[in-house]
Length: 97
Image 1 (cartoon, rainbow, N blue to C red):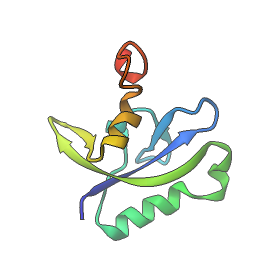
Image 2: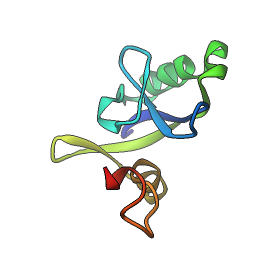
Image 3: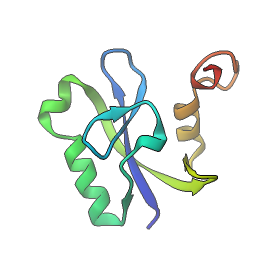
């Protein structure tokens, strides 16, 4: 099984966020709590799906990631787009920062 992290959307502004090791949420995938194995992945998804988080985030789910050049990179193109923002205009989204 590959490495996995939990992603969701923050309700306040709709931005893509990632579950961190301290149970918070970050816009930076490199701050993610990484699960290595099925049991660890299920545990972090359960943490992210706690009912009290329904007022903070929506739609948490696991994504596969790889370690590349000292950082985490999603393995699926859809998730790459979610982490970077729109692909049609590089002056928008996270890549514009």
